Length: 259
Image (cartoon, rainbow, N blue to C red; front, side, top):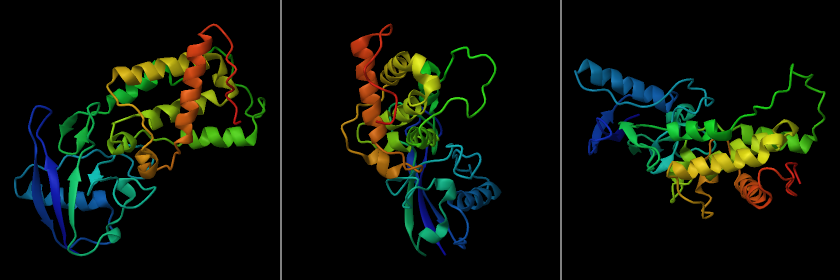
């Protein structure tokens, strides 16, 4: 099959950037999207041209490194799929595809399809951890956790921090990402002692990074490769409100359970 690519090329953050067109013949329908780009880059290198820069690492849909817009859709047309796991059989012979980086003020473009997502790292550093001294690691079954609560925490923990939610949100909000990181800790007994401080710090850092506000478009849920739901945003709002009402030294009536 033959594919036409209109790829965003940008040498650096200060460069204006532009779309460049490339014809990619003899594309195997069994190759992944990134493998197709690998073949194109090899041909560009052989011609003495600059290869297309794009993020990637595990290529197994786990690490969250890859990701860009394909015809205006984060990670492409297949639901619950990262771009590294998207295969060319999803497209037709002769298709023209436009590839662009995540578009967000908080994710400045570094080069071509690569953006700086360190804002996510700083949000996690602000509170996405448990620092309470607990001594030696307890037995895995020593703390009973209701199955529904454990399942919800695991659903939240599935977030890979790829940034598709931010890129797809008309407001550039990071609420789905932050809510997943807050919820996976706040739902569990181990995260309760720092619950109020955690949500406050992470939300404050999110606002400092310049992400937009959530207005319930739910585009984030639609493109999330791990199918994380916006009900976690409702939990984040509830936990943040509870923290603001009770203060850091008081007990909130809001439970971290699965109610």
